[in-house]
Length: 93
Image 1 (tube, rainbow, N blue to C red):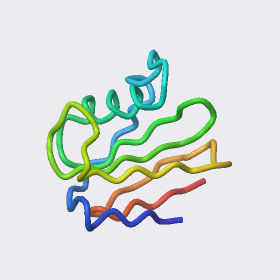
Image 2 (cartoon, helix red, strand yellow):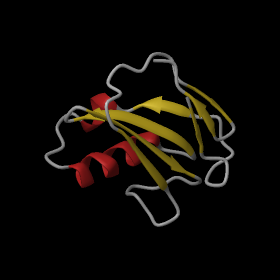
Image 3 (spheres, one colour):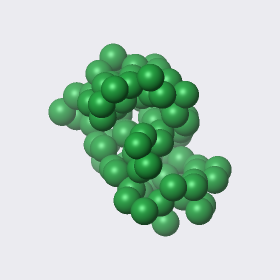
Image 4 (tube, rainbow, N blue to C red):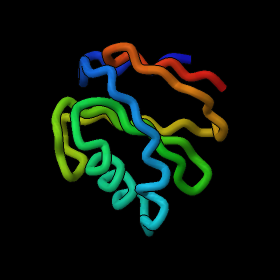
């Protein structure tokens, strides 16, 4: 499965931010924590309350902005070694 984020970011950065969102009490807080922890352009992904989320951003920020893209994967709970090739994320379940 692929998620195409190349219109949002051309960065190859991809980081699992699940640890950084663990103490979040709601989805909005989790999204902001993931983007802040990412610390640069790229894609952050995390698990939150039984779903997987991917957020693509093209710049360093401390909260989600209108320039970002957020994808929620429903029914996918075990992602192994996703890869990011300049905004094209490939998932291996």
